Length: 435
Image (cartoon, rainbow, N blue to C red; front, side):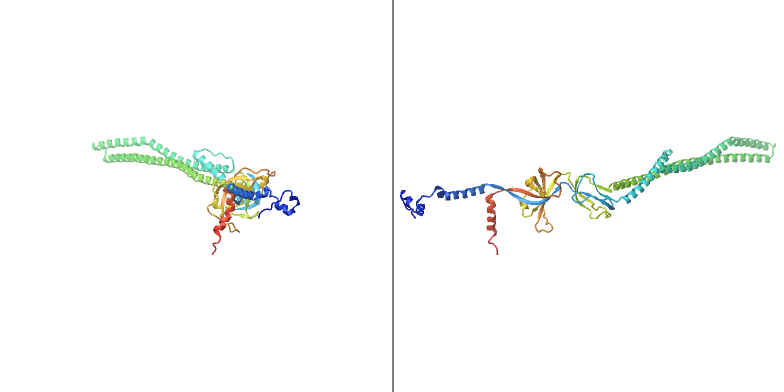
Protein backbone atom coordinates (compact mmCIF):
# COMPACT_ATOMS: atom_id res chain seq x y z
CA UNK A 1 0.00 0.00 0.00
CA UNK A 2 1.37 3.35 -1.02
CA UNK A 3 1.82 5.88 1.74
CA UNK A 4 -0.32 9.12 1.05
CA UNK A 5 1.52 12.37 0.39
CA UNK A 6 0.52 15.42 2.51
CA UNK A 7 2.03 18.87 2.31
CA UNK A 8 4.10 19.82 5.27
CA UNK A 9 2.05 22.95 5.96
CA UNK A 10 -1.18 21.00 6.12
CA UNK A 11 0.19 18.31 8.44
CA UNK A 12 -0.94 20.04 11.58
CA UNK A 13 -4.54 20.14 10.33
CA UNK A 14 -4.64 16.38 9.77
CA UNK A 15 -6.11 13.84 12.20
CA UNK A 16 -3.77 12.02 14.57
CA UNK A 17 -4.12 8.74 12.74
CA UNK A 18 -3.43 10.39 9.40
CA UNK A 19 -0.40 12.16 10.79
CA UNK A 20 0.89 8.83 12.19
CA UNK A 21 0.41 7.20 8.81
CA UNK A 22 1.96 10.01 6.86
CA UNK A 23 5.00 10.60 9.14
CA UNK A 24 8.08 8.55 8.11
CA UNK A 25 9.26 5.71 10.44
CA UNK A 26 12.20 6.30 12.78
CA UNK A 27 15.60 4.79 12.09
CA UNK A 28 15.36 2.46 15.11
CA UNK A 29 12.05 1.08 13.97
CA UNK A 30 13.32 0.52 10.47
CA UNK A 31 16.54 -1.15 11.78
CA UNK A 32 15.10 -3.64 14.29
CA UNK A 33 14.78 -6.56 11.84
CA UNK A 34 18.41 -6.17 10.94
CA UNK A 35 19.41 -5.83 14.59
CA UNK A 36 17.43 -8.96 15.49
CA UNK A 37 19.06 -10.91 12.71
CA UNK A 38 22.49 -9.66 13.75
CA UNK A 39 21.78 -10.63 17.37
CA UNK A 40 20.76 -14.14 16.35
CA UNK A 41 23.88 -14.48 14.20
CA UNK A 42 26.08 -13.14 17.02
CA UNK A 43 24.54 -15.54 19.54
CA UNK A 44 25.08 -18.39 17.13
CA UNK A 45 28.72 -17.42 16.68
CA UNK A 46 29.24 -17.08 20.43
CA UNK A 47 27.59 -20.45 21.03
CA UNK A 48 29.72 -22.04 18.34
CA UNK A 49 32.99 -20.52 19.54
CA UNK A 50 32.63 -20.43 23.34
CA UNK A 51 33.85 -23.60 25.03
CA UNK A 52 32.74 -24.84 28.44
CA UNK A 53 34.07 -27.63 30.66
CA UNK A 54 32.63 -31.13 30.57
CA UNK A 55 32.35 -32.22 34.20
CA UNK A 56 31.46 -35.62 35.63
CA UNK A 57 30.11 -35.35 39.17
CA UNK A 58 30.73 -38.11 41.71
CA UNK A 59 30.24 -38.49 45.43
CA UNK A 60 32.47 -40.18 47.97
CA UNK A 61 34.38 -39.67 51.17
CA UNK A 62 37.84 -38.80 52.40
CA UNK A 63 40.19 -41.63 53.31
CA UNK A 64 43.78 -41.99 54.46
CA UNK A 65 46.33 -42.98 51.84
CA UNK A 66 47.34 -45.94 54.04
CA UNK A 67 45.62 -49.11 55.22
CA UNK A 68 43.66 -48.86 58.47
CA UNK A 69 45.33 -49.89 61.72
CA UNK A 70 43.65 -52.97 63.19
CA UNK A 71 44.16 -53.60 66.91
CA UNK A 72 43.44 -57.13 68.13
CA UNK A 73 44.67 -59.42 70.92
CA UNK A 74 47.32 -62.07 70.31
CA UNK A 75 45.21 -64.67 72.10
CA UNK A 76 41.79 -65.05 73.67
CA UNK A 77 41.16 -62.37 76.26
CA UNK A 78 38.40 -60.67 78.21
CA UNK A 79 37.63 -57.06 77.34
CA UNK A 80 38.06 -55.08 80.54
CA UNK A 81 37.44 -51.53 79.34
CA UNK A 82 36.71 -49.80 76.02
CA UNK A 83 37.77 -46.16 76.11
CA UNK A 84 36.89 -44.86 72.62
CA UNK A 85 33.95 -44.69 70.26
CA UNK A 86 33.70 -44.52 66.48
CA UNK A 87 34.61 -41.03 65.30
CA UNK A 88 36.92 -40.22 68.21
CA UNK A 89 40.22 -38.64 67.27
CA UNK A 90 43.19 -40.17 69.10
CA UNK A 91 46.90 -39.44 69.37
CA UNK A 92 49.84 -41.82 69.22
CA UNK A 93 50.27 -43.80 72.44
CA UNK A 94 46.75 -43.16 73.71
CA UNK A 95 45.11 -46.16 75.42
CA UNK A 96 42.08 -47.26 73.41
CA UNK A 97 41.05 -50.42 75.27
CA UNK A 98 42.17 -52.56 78.19
CA UNK A 99 42.13 -56.35 78.33
CA UNK A 100 41.96 -58.48 81.47
CA UNK A 101 45.53 -59.63 82.15
CA UNK A 102 44.87 -62.04 85.05
CA UNK A 103 45.63 -65.20 83.08
CA UNK A 104 48.54 -63.54 81.31
CA UNK A 105 50.07 -62.41 84.60
CA UNK A 106 49.76 -65.93 86.00
CA UNK A 107 51.48 -67.39 82.93
CA UNK A 108 54.23 -64.79 83.18
CA UNK A 109 54.82 -65.54 86.86
CA UNK A 110 55.10 -69.28 86.16
CA UNK A 111 57.46 -68.68 83.25
CA UNK A 112 59.63 -66.33 85.31
CA UNK A 113 59.98 -68.96 88.06
CA UNK A 114 60.86 -71.61 85.48
CA UNK A 115 63.36 -69.28 83.81
CA UNK A 116 65.13 -68.54 87.11
CA UNK A 117 65.26 -72.25 87.93
CA UNK A 118 66.67 -73.20 84.52
CA UNK A 119 69.14 -70.31 84.59
CA UNK A 120 70.40 -71.47 88.00
CA UNK A 121 70.72 -75.04 86.70
CA UNK A 122 72.65 -73.77 83.69
CA UNK A 123 75.00 -71.76 85.92
CA UNK A 124 75.61 -74.84 88.10
CA UNK A 125 76.33 -77.00 85.07
CA UNK A 126 78.79 -74.41 83.76
CA UNK A 127 80.53 -74.45 87.13
CA UNK A 128 80.57 -78.27 87.08
CA UNK A 129 82.20 -78.29 83.65
CA UNK A 130 84.87 -75.78 84.67
CA UNK A 131 85.33 -77.25 88.14
CA UNK A 132 84.66 -73.92 89.86
CA UNK A 133 82.44 -73.43 92.87
CA UNK A 134 79.07 -71.84 92.14
CA UNK A 135 78.45 -68.36 93.54
CA UNK A 136 74.84 -67.95 94.71
CA UNK A 137 73.08 -64.59 94.55
CA UNK A 138 69.44 -65.63 94.96
CA UNK A 139 67.33 -68.47 96.31
CA UNK A 140 67.40 -70.51 93.10
CA UNK A 141 71.16 -70.26 92.79
CA UNK A 142 71.57 -71.07 96.48
CA UNK A 143 69.52 -74.23 95.95
CA UNK A 144 71.62 -75.20 92.95
CA UNK A 145 74.80 -74.44 94.91
CA UNK A 146 73.58 -76.87 97.57
CA UNK A 147 72.89 -79.46 94.88
CA UNK A 148 76.38 -78.88 93.50
CA UNK A 149 77.88 -79.31 96.97
CA UNK A 150 76.03 -82.58 97.56
CA UNK A 151 77.00 -83.93 94.16
CA UNK A 152 80.56 -82.77 94.70
CA UNK A 153 80.70 -84.58 98.05
CA UNK A 154 79.32 -87.75 96.47
CA UNK A 155 81.79 -87.50 93.58
CA UNK A 156 84.64 -86.86 96.03
CA UNK A 157 83.67 -89.97 98.02
CA UNK A 158 83.56 -92.08 94.88
CA UNK A 159 86.85 -90.55 93.72
CA UNK A 160 88.48 -91.30 97.07
CA UNK A 161 87.23 -94.88 96.88
CA UNK A 162 88.70 -95.32 93.40
CA UNK A 163 91.97 -93.69 94.45
CA UNK A 164 92.12 -95.90 97.54
CA UNK A 165 91.77 -98.97 95.32
CA UNK A 166 94.57 -97.63 93.12
CA UNK A 167 96.78 -96.99 96.16
CA UNK A 168 96.10 -100.49 97.50
CA UNK A 169 97.13 -102.07 94.21
CA UNK A 170 100.21 -99.85 94.05
CA UNK A 171 101.21 -100.87 97.57
CA UNK A 172 100.69 -104.53 96.71
CA UNK A 173 102.92 -104.13 93.69
CA UNK A 174 105.57 -102.47 95.82
CA UNK A 175 105.33 -105.33 98.35
CA UNK A 176 105.71 -107.93 95.63
CA UNK A 177 108.64 -106.12 94.11
CA UNK A 178 110.28 -105.90 97.55
CA UNK A 179 109.99 -109.69 97.87
CA UNK A 180 111.38 -110.32 94.39
CA UNK A 181 115.14 -110.24 95.35
CA UNK A 182 114.60 -112.78 98.14
CA UNK A 183 112.70 -115.11 95.84
CA UNK A 184 115.36 -114.76 93.21
CA UNK A 185 118.12 -115.49 95.72
CA UNK A 186 116.14 -118.43 97.07
CA UNK A 187 115.89 -119.93 93.61
CA UNK A 188 119.60 -119.33 93.00
CA UNK A 189 120.53 -120.99 96.28
CA UNK A 190 118.19 -123.89 95.60
CA UNK A 191 119.88 -124.39 92.25
CA UNK A 192 123.30 -124.41 93.92
CA UNK A 193 122.19 -126.87 96.58
CA UNK A 194 120.63 -129.11 93.97
CA UNK A 195 123.86 -129.13 91.95
CA UNK A 196 125.88 -129.97 95.04
CA UNK A 197 123.52 -132.76 96.09
CA UNK A 198 123.64 -134.23 92.61
CA UNK A 199 127.42 -134.10 92.65
CA UNK A 200 127.56 -135.79 96.10
CA UNK A 201 125.09 -138.40 95.01
CA UNK A 202 127.18 -139.19 91.96
CA UNK A 203 130.30 -139.53 94.14
CA UNK A 204 128.26 -141.61 96.54
CA UNK A 205 129.06 -139.17 99.30
CA UNK A 206 125.42 -138.32 99.61
CA UNK A 207 122.19 -140.19 99.21
CA UNK A 208 119.78 -140.02 96.33
CA UNK A 209 117.09 -138.92 98.75
CA UNK A 210 119.02 -135.80 99.62
CA UNK A 211 119.43 -135.02 95.91
CA UNK A 212 115.69 -135.37 95.35
CA UNK A 213 114.93 -133.18 98.37
CA UNK A 214 117.28 -130.53 96.95
CA UNK A 215 115.50 -130.76 93.59
CA UNK A 216 112.13 -130.37 95.34
CA UNK A 217 113.40 -127.30 97.17
CA UNK A 218 114.56 -125.82 93.87
CA UNK A 219 111.15 -126.49 92.29
CA UNK A 220 109.41 -124.79 95.23
CA UNK A 221 111.68 -121.76 94.84
CA UNK A 222 110.99 -121.54 91.10
CA UNK A 223 107.26 -121.96 91.70
CA UNK A 224 107.30 -119.18 94.28
CA UNK A 225 109.21 -116.92 91.88
CA UNK A 226 106.83 -117.67 89.01
CA UNK A 227 103.86 -117.02 91.29
CA UNK A 228 105.49 -113.75 92.23
CA UNK A 229 105.74 -112.69 88.57
CA UNK A 230 102.16 -113.80 87.97
CA UNK A 231 100.97 -111.71 90.90
CA UNK A 232 102.91 -108.74 89.52
CA UNK A 233 101.21 -109.12 86.15
CA UNK A 234 97.81 -109.38 87.84
CA UNK A 235 98.50 -106.38 90.03
CA UNK A 236 99.66 -104.38 87.00
CA UNK A 237 96.37 -105.18 85.25
CA UNK A 238 94.44 -104.25 88.39
CA UNK A 239 96.38 -100.99 88.58
CA UNK A 240 95.54 -100.19 84.97
CA UNK A 241 91.89 -101.00 85.67
CA UNK A 242 91.87 -98.79 88.76
CA UNK A 243 93.41 -95.90 86.85
CA UNK A 244 91.00 -96.46 83.95
CA UNK A 245 88.06 -96.51 86.37
CA UNK A 246 89.21 -93.24 87.92
CA UNK A 247 89.66 -91.66 84.49
CA UNK A 248 86.27 -92.98 83.34
CA UNK A 249 84.71 -91.56 86.50
CA UNK A 250 86.14 -88.09 85.78
CA UNK A 251 85.09 -88.29 82.11
CA UNK A 252 81.60 -89.47 83.12
CA UNK A 253 81.19 -86.50 85.45
CA UNK A 254 82.08 -84.08 82.65
CA UNK A 255 79.95 -86.01 80.15
CA UNK A 256 76.88 -85.90 82.36
CA UNK A 257 77.42 -82.19 83.01
CA UNK A 258 77.76 -81.54 79.27
CA UNK A 259 74.68 -83.62 78.42
CA UNK A 260 72.66 -81.91 81.14
CA UNK A 261 73.85 -78.53 79.87
CA UNK A 262 72.86 -79.45 76.30
CA UNK A 263 69.42 -80.51 77.58
CA UNK A 264 68.81 -77.49 79.82
CA UNK A 265 70.06 -74.76 77.44
CA UNK A 266 67.32 -75.31 74.80
CA UNK A 267 64.68 -75.47 77.53
CA UNK A 268 65.90 -72.16 78.92
CA UNK A 269 65.91 -70.61 75.44
CA UNK A 270 62.36 -71.86 74.87
CA UNK A 271 61.18 -70.51 78.22
CA UNK A 272 62.85 -67.15 77.52
CA UNK A 273 61.08 -67.00 74.17
CA UNK A 274 57.75 -67.88 75.78
CA UNK A 275 58.38 -65.27 78.47
CA UNK A 276 59.17 -62.66 75.82
CA UNK A 277 55.89 -63.51 74.13
CA UNK A 278 54.07 -63.38 77.47
CA UNK A 279 55.64 -59.98 78.20
CA UNK A 280 54.50 -58.79 74.78
CA UNK A 281 50.99 -60.10 75.43
CA UNK A 282 50.98 -58.40 78.83
CA UNK A 283 52.15 -55.16 77.24
CA UNK A 284 49.30 -55.48 74.75
CA UNK A 285 46.78 -55.75 77.56
CA UNK A 286 46.57 -51.98 77.08
CA UNK A 287 45.77 -51.50 73.41
CA UNK A 288 47.45 -48.22 72.43
CA UNK A 289 47.20 -46.23 69.23
CA UNK A 290 50.45 -46.73 67.31
CA UNK A 291 49.86 -43.49 65.39
CA UNK A 292 47.38 -40.61 65.41
CA UNK A 293 44.09 -41.33 63.75
CA UNK A 294 40.32 -41.49 63.89
CA UNK A 295 38.46 -44.47 65.33
CA UNK A 296 36.53 -46.15 62.55
CA UNK A 297 34.92 -49.01 64.48
CA UNK A 298 35.15 -50.85 67.80
CA UNK A 299 34.27 -54.31 69.07
CA UNK A 300 30.56 -54.96 69.37
CA UNK A 301 30.72 -56.43 72.88
CA UNK A 302 31.13 -54.28 75.96
CA UNK A 303 33.36 -54.75 79.01
CA UNK A 304 33.45 -58.37 80.12
CA UNK A 305 33.04 -59.73 76.59
CA UNK A 306 35.29 -62.55 75.46
CA UNK A 307 37.50 -61.47 72.57
CA UNK A 308 38.65 -64.36 70.41
CA UNK A 309 42.12 -64.67 68.94
CA UNK A 310 42.37 -62.40 65.90
CA UNK A 311 39.04 -60.66 66.64
CA UNK A 312 39.12 -56.93 65.93
CA UNK A 313 38.86 -54.63 68.95
CA UNK A 314 39.53 -51.22 67.38
CA UNK A 315 39.97 -50.11 63.77
CA UNK A 316 41.91 -46.86 63.42
CA UNK A 317 42.22 -44.68 60.32
CA UNK A 318 45.60 -42.88 60.35
CA UNK A 319 45.60 -39.09 60.19
CA UNK A 320 49.35 -38.56 59.87
CA UNK A 321 49.33 -39.54 56.20
CA UNK A 322 48.05 -37.78 53.11
CA UNK A 323 44.31 -37.88 52.50
CA UNK A 324 42.74 -39.10 49.29
CA UNK A 325 39.20 -39.02 48.01
CA UNK A 326 37.47 -42.32 47.37
CA UNK A 327 34.64 -41.69 44.92
CA UNK A 328 32.00 -43.65 43.08
CA UNK A 329 31.48 -42.76 39.40
CA UNK A 330 28.26 -43.79 37.66
CA UNK A 331 28.86 -46.52 35.14
CA UNK A 332 27.17 -44.46 32.41
CA UNK A 333 29.82 -41.74 32.86
CA UNK A 334 32.87 -43.91 33.60
CA UNK A 335 33.79 -44.12 29.93
CA UNK A 336 34.45 -40.40 29.64
CA UNK A 337 36.97 -40.15 32.49
CA UNK A 338 40.63 -41.11 32.42
CA UNK A 339 43.50 -41.28 34.88
CA UNK A 340 45.14 -37.91 35.33
CA UNK A 341 41.98 -35.86 34.80
CA UNK A 342 41.86 -32.76 37.04
CA UNK A 343 39.33 -32.94 39.86
CA UNK A 344 37.74 -30.28 42.04
CA UNK A 345 36.67 -31.60 45.44
CA UNK A 346 34.02 -29.96 47.61
CA UNK A 347 33.91 -31.10 51.25
CA UNK A 348 30.32 -31.30 52.46
CA UNK A 349 31.30 -30.34 56.02
CA UNK A 350 32.83 -27.05 54.83
CA UNK A 351 30.76 -24.95 52.36
CA UNK A 352 32.94 -24.32 49.35
CA UNK A 353 31.70 -20.72 48.92
CA UNK A 354 33.20 -19.88 52.31
CA UNK A 355 36.06 -22.37 52.77
CA UNK A 356 37.05 -23.03 49.19
CA UNK A 357 37.70 -26.31 47.39
CA UNK A 358 40.51 -28.85 47.07
CA UNK A 359 42.21 -29.64 43.80
CA UNK A 360 43.35 -33.08 42.77
CA UNK A 361 44.01 -35.62 40.05
CA UNK A 362 42.19 -38.83 39.27
CA UNK A 363 44.65 -41.54 40.28
CA UNK A 364 42.83 -44.67 39.15
CA UNK A 365 39.42 -46.08 38.32
CA UNK A 366 38.34 -49.65 38.95
CA UNK A 367 37.67 -51.85 35.96
CA UNK A 368 34.75 -53.58 37.63
CA UNK A 369 31.55 -51.97 38.87
CA UNK A 370 29.51 -52.53 42.00
CA UNK A 371 25.98 -51.73 43.06
CA UNK A 372 25.61 -50.12 46.50
CA UNK A 373 23.04 -51.67 48.79
CA UNK A 374 19.64 -50.07 48.37
CA UNK A 375 20.35 -48.66 44.90
CA UNK A 376 20.13 -49.95 41.34
CA UNK A 377 22.80 -47.83 39.65
CA UNK A 378 26.22 -49.37 39.07
CA UNK A 379 29.28 -47.44 40.20
CA UNK A 380 32.99 -47.60 39.48
CA UNK A 381 35.24 -46.78 42.42
CA UNK A 382 38.00 -44.23 41.92
CA UNK A 383 40.78 -42.60 43.91
CA UNK A 384 41.73 -38.93 43.75
CA UNK A 385 45.01 -37.52 45.05
CA UNK A 386 44.46 -34.16 46.73
CA UNK A 387 46.46 -30.96 46.90
CA UNK A 388 45.94 -27.52 48.37
CA UNK A 389 44.07 -26.65 51.54
CA UNK A 390 40.80 -25.11 52.64
CA UNK A 391 40.64 -21.55 53.92
CA UNK A 392 38.79 -19.76 56.72
CA UNK A 393 38.33 -22.93 58.76
CA UNK A 394 36.86 -22.49 62.25
CA UNK A 395 39.36 -22.73 65.15
CA UNK A 396 40.20 -26.37 65.84
CA UNK A 397 38.48 -27.65 62.72
CA UNK A 398 40.34 -29.86 60.29
CA UNK A 399 39.72 -32.26 57.47
CA UNK A 400 39.25 -35.79 58.78
CA UNK A 401 38.95 -39.19 57.11
CA UNK A 402 35.36 -40.23 56.56
CA UNK A 403 34.03 -36.79 55.61
CA UNK A 404 31.69 -36.92 52.63
CA UNK A 405 32.45 -34.93 49.50
CA UNK A 406 31.44 -34.12 45.96
CA UNK A 407 34.03 -34.48 43.22
CA UNK A 408 33.84 -32.72 39.86
CA UNK A 409 36.01 -34.45 37.27
CA UNK A 410 36.90 -32.32 34.26
CA UNK A 411 36.95 -34.68 31.29
CA UNK A 412 37.27 -32.09 28.49
CA UNK A 413 35.54 -29.12 26.87
CA UNK A 414 32.75 -28.53 24.35
CA UNK A 415 30.99 -25.55 22.78
CA UNK A 416 27.74 -24.10 24.04
CA UNK A 417 26.18 -24.99 20.71
CA UNK A 418 27.13 -28.64 21.22
CA UNK A 419 25.48 -28.53 24.64
CA UNK A 420 22.15 -27.37 23.17
CA UNK A 421 22.33 -29.51 20.05
CA UNK A 422 23.19 -32.71 21.90
CA UNK A 423 19.64 -33.33 23.25
CA UNK A 424 18.20 -32.51 19.82
CA UNK A 425 20.56 -34.89 18.06
CA UNK A 426 19.90 -37.59 20.64
CA UNK A 427 16.18 -37.11 20.26
CA UNK A 428 16.40 -37.22 16.48
CA UNK A 429 18.50 -40.38 16.46
CA UNK A 430 16.59 -42.23 19.17
CA UNK A 431 12.98 -41.19 18.51
CA UNK A 432 10.44 -42.42 15.97
CA UNK A 433 11.92 -45.92 16.08
CA UNK A 434 9.52 -47.57 18.51
CA UNK A 435 7.85 -50.74 17.26
